[in-house]
Length: 294
Image (cartoon, rainbow, N blue to C red; front, side, top):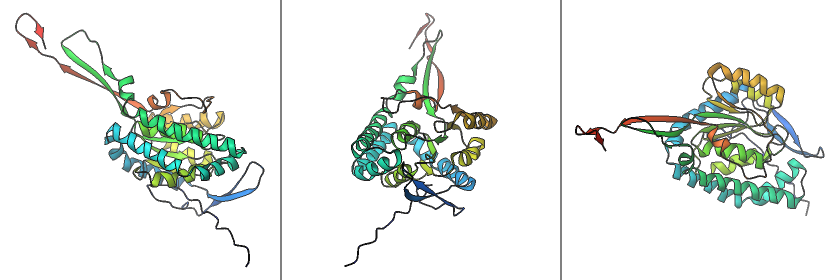
């Protein structure tokens, strides 16, 4: 009996809940830390970026309108699905980052725990950054956070999975939708994450994953008039400056790249970075001439 031929995996983009190839038909070679070929990944075009924004905008109303508790349930479901595919992701992370099997498995465990961590925050962040404000007058004054909208996320280049989840999860936990540009040299964990999201109750379009040249995809996203914010985690200093200038055209919120240890427990900064604050005034009314109020 002859040796069996392996079935090579075809990696695709994840846009609008579907798995298209790049509209350009282009691919590029992805190699491991030693230069060994791993797969051909889609080389996304500007058109792919625009399609992803359309999908993200279409999904925004339903996702932002869902209850915070429900979003937490959905994020927890993602963690459940990742738990069942730990071996696959450990292998992909080991190849992408040149880690041993045990270290890669530890990274995957930490990534799953990170999803659970953000799942728990969905219905609590409003209590941290919102609330009743003291005012001198017969009014109730209440502030509550609301999602910014469509957020472009440049995933970290070196941390292909834990870093990826650490920048994507806080964006969607707070009700935003995301267009994610995967690590240019190690996109495979991100593309596989799309397969998990597709089967994890996350509505199509809430997260859209593109692979390719970071600078090529990021430029149209930074200038796009229907993108409300951009996280520059995966941009170098030169690219970040160019993108920040482009983002100023429609006053996007911009989170500049910073030194982050993704293994450390995160704070709330990445959630609050993409929230707007709505403040409502409501008269309390007066009862009687004595000035008493309710």
